[in-house]
Length: 148
Image (cartoon, rainbow, N blue to C red; front, side, top):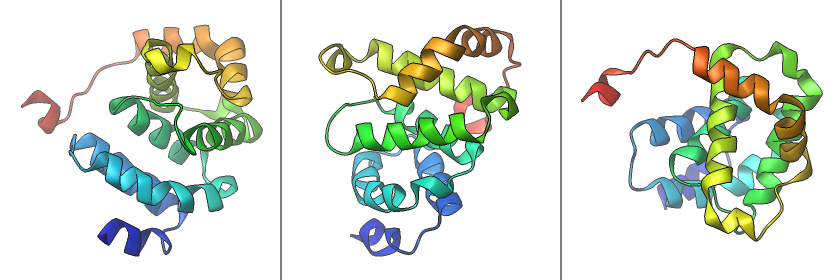
């Protein structure tokens, strides 16, 4: 209930930071948080910066990427925003996060029955190999939580 009460007041950066933090903690309440945050995220989808969009896509990858409900519209909005803002401007961390999201989509059985949103397919087709190589070459710096 608290996520619902707060979600309408959240700005794009706050949504991205909150969802990223919940995913980072591997909190069991992730699906509830996502259900409450998704409508607000869709309302402000055009206002997310590329880093925020990458963080949100990565957070979805942490808990499985499902084609159910409003998620495809959300993924389309995030991917379209990344493409519009200039894919080339993404840093190594953001590219790695997007790669992990695409990998999760490829591994999720439910996506075999649904087409990925158009902008996600464009990122995959135009930048997939670059994302993969960036991910493989990125230095790994696990957090204290991840090391535990």
